[in-house]
Image (cartoon, rainbow, N blue to C red; front, side, top):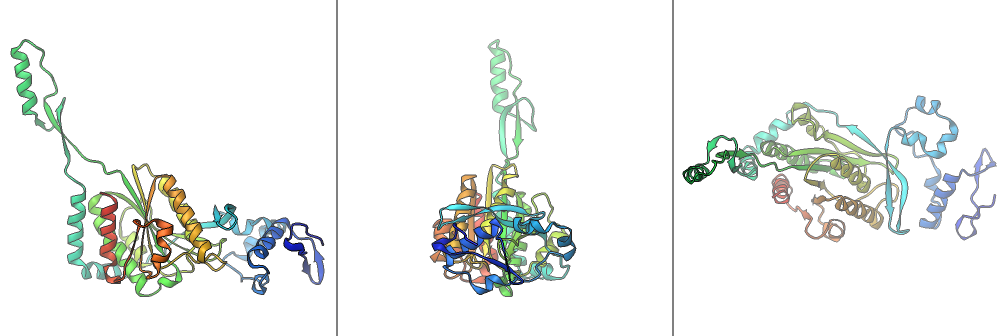
Length: 364
């Protein structure tokens, strides 16, 4: 079977039980792309990756012809483009992302954290309360809580001169609306297992305790996945949810998952932020390393896609910041986030305090 689109004169063939079969167009495109990137098709690419997370009863209901259109993998998922820096264009509808729930764990982790950092929490609350600022006094109002003495004196002077007295004789207190929305995206890749996961969870608990005194709208989501067809985010707290016992149990239930495909997660979180009516929108990442995934989403490719997703967010006036414990982060984060929009934590116990400190700087 001749394939004029195959690179360097290659001929692509598909055999089933020893008999040649015509290649679907989508498979031709995929095979040609792999050969262009790698120069060959690795043997492991020709083996089934495993049963996956899709039940057999779902597959039985599908038309077999839909295998090549990705119906099995994209049912009910959010579909996003991905930036290919080598070809300088987007791979259209490349990533399938699903929003999953974190299984709540009703244990003593939250209470232990509150006890462990009791003094720090008090200090953070006071600091965050100061960020609210004092309410403004609006003078010369038609109604209000107190009399505006200056306006009253001027009104009597006008009366003595035969002029009409103004009715704007009051002072009204005006509450300052910060109008800020912040989304914290938490790395839940496999490399966060252990003490890193504990540090992330402690940071989120302290942050929530402080933010509750401030009144800003905030959301918390985790992200992980395995290949472009199984990108996953984990809802821990949405913008509309209260910080209650269920949310605390979800923070306690955060655990390490798979890989770190960051670009698609940033695009989805940017979409969620744009749905919030806010004057200032921020996306803060807690991570332990660079973008990485099983299907060659690593190295320069993953870094460039993540950078492009952050550029897209910036175009939509979303401010992004990254807090990481990766000692090699200085090699790639300036390129992704910009020199002033990230910080490397070399002392993990300081992570909870640094998260709160960065938040204060970004919102004042």
